[in-house]
Length: 42
Image (cartoon, rainbow, N blue to C red; front, top):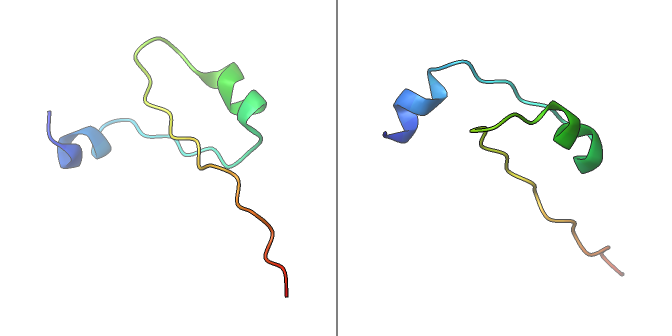
């Protein structure tokens, strides 16, 4: 399945803590967790 077909289906974007997002996860879901960033030091 190509990406455009996947994104044209039922898509839900949740911006929250990863533990909260995991509560919504169901079998077959694709979940992307953006890794934490190091703090910038000046």
